[in-house]
Length: 76
Image (cartoon, rainbow, N blue to C red; front, side):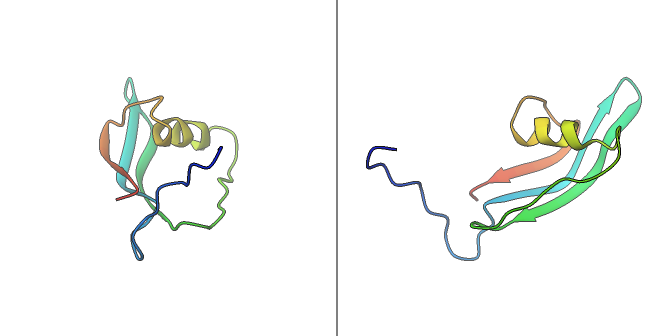
């Protein structure tokens, strides 16, 4: 990144957090009340069977989809 340092997160502040994150599609709940906290410098994986909501959760976290309910906080 040509000399540009990434923004730092205050100590103790999660890099990414979700609270009660939910996504419904026409009466079908694909993501149901996910609470997630990810600290800076850690690595995580989403694991589960087909249809478990992994891709939907990823699309919520990246902003591709809007949540039905809950919140996503990035860098505080």
